[in-house]
Amino acid sequence: MAAPTVWFTKDDGRKLPVSDDYLIPFLTPTSPGTSYWEPPPADNVEALRREDGRVLLQLHQVIDLLLRCGVDLGNKTLLDIGTGNGMIPRLILHYSDLKAAVGIDPYLDGEHLSSWQAHDHGELFKELTGFIDKHCPDAMDFQEYRHLAGYQDFSLQPARVPLRAQGHKNFRFEKIGAHDLQQLDEKFDIFYAKAIDHIPDWPGIFKAISAAASDDALIVIKHFSFFAYLGPHRYATTNIPWGHLLLTDAEYRRFAEEFHGHRAKEMVEFYFDGLSYPRTTMHQMVMMARENGFTLHAAINEPNRNVARIQRMADVVPDFWDIVRQNHPTVSIEEMLSGRYHIVFRRAR
Image (spheres, rainbow, N blue to C red):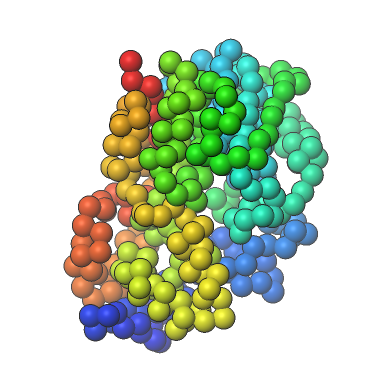
């Protein structure tokens, strides 16, 4: 690790090292001619293939997790919260006994910094099902698409899971947010959420799900913790190692002005408005679920694939653990070192 060339001074006088060496090596490569905080151009073929790999991996992971939990999808309905382009629920519906699927999202393509670029959903679905039918006709096998998923932040490979194309079944998209499920006036058996790190008011999410849940409902969450190394995502992560845990909110705003002045406004807006706020730990999430009638059934902490390297980042910061404990006294080291959490809650009986 190269020595830092500059330092940021905290309000209490302690200094933190600033260097892109603490950030760039852990990010997915960017498109030529773009900065790391910019989304890839719509015509970047490599980036589009990485998106294909991300969808295939998510599809594989959620089906694998449901099977491990003994869930029979037959005659059940699924609601995908924060569905994006809707590929995950459409593909699950297409390749399982699931009865029906609905996807909700307050944003359409290109309306949010983290959204997909605008594209033809029908063509993408045709492309993905064509790939699966050719390379994974009977079962989802990671080895068949690993070349597309190489940059995804994961360290545990899902097991080989059976698939069976079942032809056309209706998928529906509704442009609503996670807190507005009452507008659907429906009950669902499975709730899937892969982007709650972008949604505020988690108690409101669990309350809305509880009101729309069937008697034996499950909640399946794929979660990227704010307290992980790249928790603020590439758009708002600092080039201070673990900077989002070492800086107070006021210090973060000052850091953005001092080191990212040309984009400080956008950086700060994403940090506080594009990510869930106030920050919520895994412990708090479990308690929110319990308060709304759901008990924890399974929780898999999938370590960051760079977990060995990011642990060493703490060693370059004077008083690292003292500052973390001061700012976030309840966060666990396990959560700090997490990559993705895969969580299942069951309705309490």
